[in-house]
Image: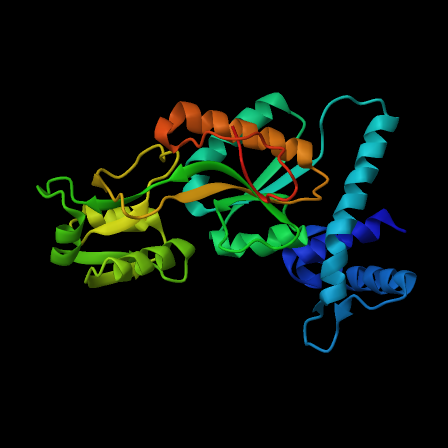
Length: 314
């Protein structure tokens, strides 16, 4: 089985099409197409749906991508051992929700690079819900997100911290009752297409709070800026690690709204478990030293019984 074909298959899964994979692998599209046809002949099955104008991986093809990544990682490890190298090399590809990309993630990556200077770490932002499938398919190694409402059978969530929800209001507002504020001032809502937005919407209904909706946005930084300019108030989760230059607004805790757990989502059979454990450890240190102590979840170690796929780190 050709390692080159495995790399090409992984690139197609990662970049979404044969053409995009060709561009990233510095190949022609015809070369990529030929490699995949030879790979299918070797396997004796079709792994692409060619009925569509742009061929894409079918269910069988998506299923074998994580194993292809595993084989490729094992091959790279074999090469490293054969050369007598002790240093950690290779790549760790992670995704992270937008708030984490300006908070805990860059700090953790900086620490990882100091420990493993030959390890290449790539990070890409996305909404939590949009990062689950790439982890499940093995397109990325792990993702720092809010805990999914439902976990797939191959996924494990390692909790790093709890982010309590709070009410953001202009700094000069001399009121502190969340219900009174929400029913008095325009409401800037987190998009209900996001898990946090759905949770907040359910809470408003449950508490029978009627709001005067002013706008609906999908970014906490944008929402905070709108509040800063006095355009309304908002309910958002408090980041476990703040951005370097946070917007100056008043934060009022909301005790009746359950905090959201945030952490690392990974496949249980990931071939990069040791590196992901190291990343989790660095994130815990970052939250402990740069975040609010109350946000760090005290609990069990990373390795827990397999029956519990939502795990707490300490």
